[in-house]
Length: 452
Ligand SMILES: [Zn+2]
Image (cartoon, rainbow, N blue to C red):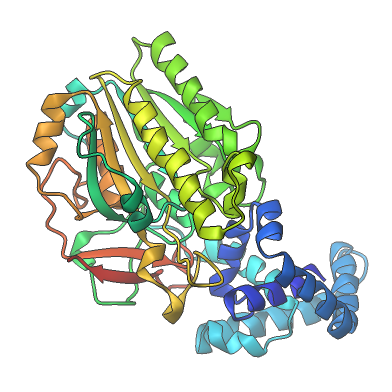
């Protein structure tokens, strides 16, 4: 039943059934189920009703086979054999004809089979790993900066952010203009920021595949270089047992302290800012890498502003959330840090306001707005600001450069990726959509955008 509802909901929200390229996204995007339910309530109710009428026989079979599958040792040989045949057909269709062909596959099976297929894929298509190496190339920055604070906001689209912000007069806030997120969906984007990259040498044309490689997590790098590591989990992703923004247990072992977000969504980011200020004062002497995963302007937008300020108009509420949670937040943080701290601020992805689904879309309906995000630095270190200004980075950055900047300050270097300490020479801005992993030999799909 769950699978059928999911397929239908996917159809109503994304305009197509939950195929393999969207299933991981649905898992990831809908990880915050209560938000998803609120945002897509109408679609979900439709799906539940239609599922009940249309798929009762199928749901019966699925639930029956589920139970039998569990007691596979003493019975259900026929069922498990049919199951094997079906999943084999599923994978064959997928490999030979692509995800589109699965549209005709029995609804309800897609979710279950896709999940199993993703699991199987992780066994047969291991990730390509490349380690960063210790480097003193950036030792000036390594010496100057004791606190690296990486703030990943949620759903902050660049042009909306730009229209509301004016940091030109702010001495300690350096707005690097429009940046591009590594992906258009929270989980893959956060994953790539923490430990994924691709080489600039393979920047290709629109909609080509891209080889996403894995490297050590920023937490692992920071820990190795004697930073104490912190994760502000304002979205409680680590409490979700399924997706967790693709965190693995060994990665979490490299986080010294996890600060879970508490209280109403709209109050969490500011609350965590107070914790950050405390931390910076109380543990002044230690070197710190602090990753703040904000709630930001996550849908439904009205949940992210003080209830007294909710207007009921979608865009007005969104802009309010950006003003309060993003722009005021940056001003607040600039008053709380010293010359030994560098804040790198961006958003996990942008927002496509004209589509039914604001992000995590795929294929031809994708818009650039799902990838356009701000990139802002906050520091009281004048020397650092002046050096970075010389690098001509305005509107020429992306998430990969943000992660590489963190590695460089830690004293490590991933040779094939540039940081903001080098001049930007990229011709394209790119982000991937769909899964960030290789799928049975097929590399993730990318969307390229030409710089102005
Ligand atoms: Zn997100």
